Length: 176
Image (cartoon, rainbow, N blue to C red):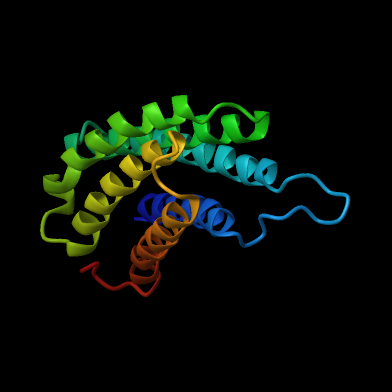
């Protein structure tokens, strides 16, 4: 269960940091400083790399279990996305390719709603559906169709939703 807690905590941190930036919290450079978006980019890149590490650990622990291997596939989708987002933000790149990447990642993540490992867990299933919405919003944002604050608040909600399973796991309680 440690991998699952790390995965959700990592997802939530990535969403939290960029969400706060997009709503304007910490978005202004300090006097004489650089735009904080580069630091946000580094955080997103670290999130992507942490998730890739979790994919490796899940595959190592799976022992051929198709459920765990399938979960590793879902986490890999997020790892690729967060890594690409981090690189784009650090380098000051065009976000449209990241928006293009968000569409298939969101759609593929949506296929996990009925994933057996999540069966009967409202929190996992509902957060998976919410990620679909958020990824589509990311694509809209990248093309100037979704305002930054709207996406930012959606990401903050995503982060809170992502922290919830970690709290249940830390308290050794079943995830609803």
